[in-house]
Image (cartoon, rainbow, N blue to C red; front, side, top):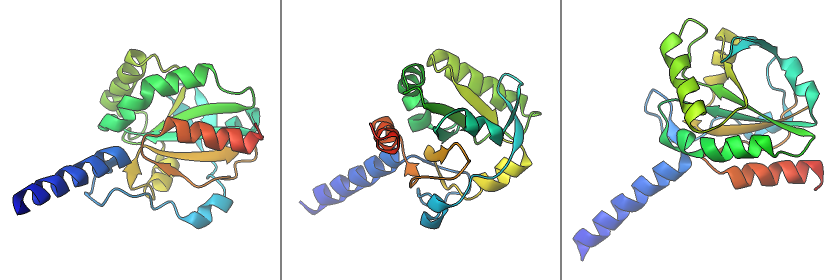
Length: 183
């Protein structure tokens, strides 16, 4: 009986870790350290490249009332697992919303291997939405994200408007967008 409890506890712990997301390099517990106070802060200004090589700045937020920023990694099974659903949602989002990914393990434009892997993952998932390769400024911001996927919600002015969602939960992302847009 005692052995069954230990096995059950271990299985529940493994399930909790898998459901919450992948831990960034460094082995810290799966949690987002994007503090609650940041929900009233602003996403940092940036100038970087997309996976397709286009220049992208924080001005991209002005295109829509709300931007869903999905921070993901090529090493993360839950991140990869939610890509088909994110790709489908990106095609059918409300007109005042957009989805942007940030490939957290791509270390600038020179990281050709990770960029190639991210492109492969997105293509296989039919997830055709804007994905960014973080430059040094975005990488510095991402140091505060301890688990992926972590999803952040930003308004047209670049202000963070809701609590981040840690873990793969597309329905929850959709609910935040609906609530923000008053739908």
